[in-house]
Length: 444
Image (tube, rainbow, N blue to C red):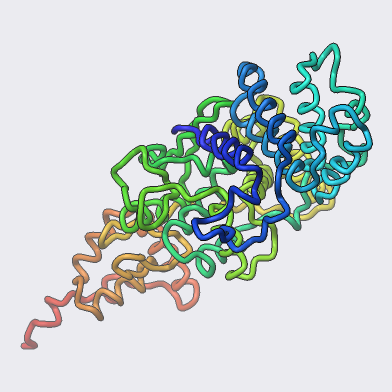
């Protein structure tokens, strides 16, 4: 998977050279792309020159600053220069720096506020070619704090986490095509970083007997393969088989445009989530990042250990973030509390998340659908039998033969028979079933 950070860096440089968003985001008619007025987002000549110098200094130190880090630092400084201005003056004048810090602190997220302040200090350090360890930023920027509030708890609230109901609604009611269905289902189970998800190619989806592997190549944390066995398997198959414009091109973007194998902008990519949530009535935050947090929450809640969550999410061993999820949402503490109060704990095994393979056509369909998405055969054995008889598509003998080849369907049938026996008494199978051959025999 080729990283798209290089493309984003290139776009940022072009935006800076153009004089800021006010000039960069215009079409050939002079109108602003997306209809957003950016006329006040201009760069002064001095800020433009120093932003390009900042980019050059970071590039010279590529062993310290990977492409992802460079994008973040340069983007934050560019935005501050466009929105507020005075970036160059802040190198020597604290009063010029204060409005920039005020802008950074206007963001709701404390992490985002910190990231902007860090970028501002780093801008001063690198543009003036100061040693970050010995010299640090200039006096005009040295006063800027880069820590988080002491009372800040980065562990999200349960109420903010997406659950099955939220994601199912986005898929069933909000998504407008197979691409969006596959996108939401994949991110909910895989929990990738936003850029990792965006950068995926068709070749990164590898079939496996248990589902599919999502191959992730992150310049910061290396490579990993994330196994998906749930609804993502079926929706990815639908997307690649029926709608993707280049399903056999391994280098094509996985989340391409519908008509051409081209990657949409990252902002458009984020809108896939936001618009689907709005249509589905989901009010929670639906960024790829919150999908990732919700994935960690779900894994911790189900009792998976820290090592598994770290491996799947590409985190380092002993990750503080994962430890917080385990400590806050892990099953062990809840079970101890319930057991200590004599509350019977749910010992039922977790519901099988894998899609159901149709006994008639072999198509895999998400389990919550109830019937095959391809041939419409119900998953319930009794309903499938009745559907086959009524439509004439399958004889009882053919359905029985298909049933014998599907262990899961056999289990469902046994459960259904046991439930019926409990309600109305034992069933004499030999008296109940009559083959069509018996029906055609003349009475003597």
